[in-house]
Length: 303
Image (cartoon, rainbow, N blue to C red):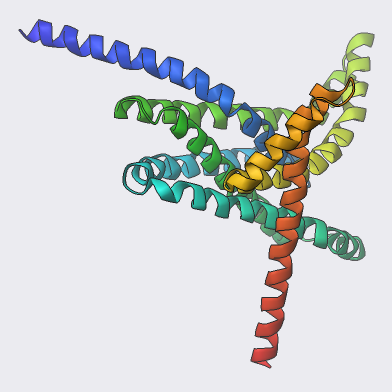
């Protein structure tokens, strides 16, 4: 009897694992777009840190990301079970936050660059504070992107058994975290790899090393631009998906563009991202403007 019960249990576990495997593959495909944006954003977030502190910073953000997902997975399951209507508004708040952060970065970017250029070399204490701010900012951004990944995954497994939902969400959470921060670690240490190769004795290794050394700073600058654009695309995309009129309008626009000239299919694929980016910039500008008004009113009230 005990043996039969054990075999039944093992059969149930095997069935669950099979379902989890299928669901995880589907969820991974669905969240691949967010993974790309997550990669660009987080690589951009850790730029400007001392070379010897790059990997510790990436590791600190990765741990923060795992903690985010440890909070989000049970929270998503509870919200889905008891107040499913709250998922979209919460995601939209997160999307609005991303747009706000992106526009604030654009708005104050020039001022900060000029201020830093006029300042003397910072002392160690300031560099440590700068590093902590970088980590906190990256973890905040990761929270919103992780929430979207978890929400997409939950939507895929919504009709599955509870244990399948839990297992799939956990697998996706771990795989996405390892994937993103493993790649981020590789990107930020690309220049070190180039330096190591450039010191090798073979001509090919030296050539590849020189190529990597030349490409690394350009790649980081590119990721800074792509990371900021990703904030608007992800944030704007979350907001437009939460409003049926806007979502269907973007799909309709993509359909119209698909029939234009030879490049129609390519333009149709790019149109949703570009429109989400524009909407994200507008939404971010509105929030920054409103926060500016509130700050001025508070300042006047205090004086």
